[in-house]
Length: 95
Image 1 (cartoon, rainbow, N blue to C red):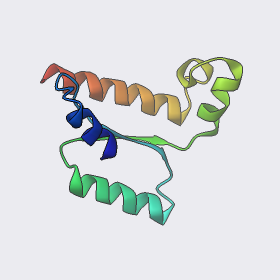
Image 2 (cartoon, rainbow, N blue to C red):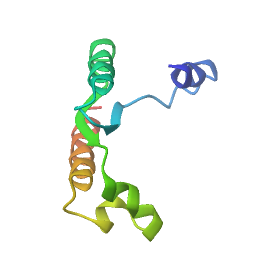
Image 3 (cartoon, helix red, strand yellow):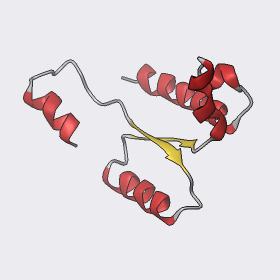
Image 4 (cartoon, rainbow, N blue to C red):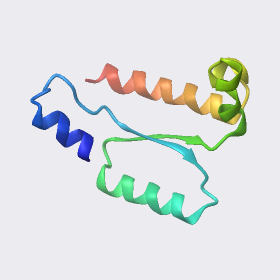
């Protein structure tokens, strides 16, 4: 919220929030579920449907100098980022 307010305060009107991405999500964790529910409740139209899971392969990728998608393209994390890219493209098409 503070970042959004800062953008507004500096009259950076050409910039806007396209969406909120939930990353490092582990839905087995009650706190993650609660935070996700609150985001959906308060920012219904901004929250992307795609969840980026907490994923070891994503965490390992930078140490190999690669993106998660290049390092382990079949990992859940890489597939989630590809799904997010598709969702973002669809959202931008309607802007």
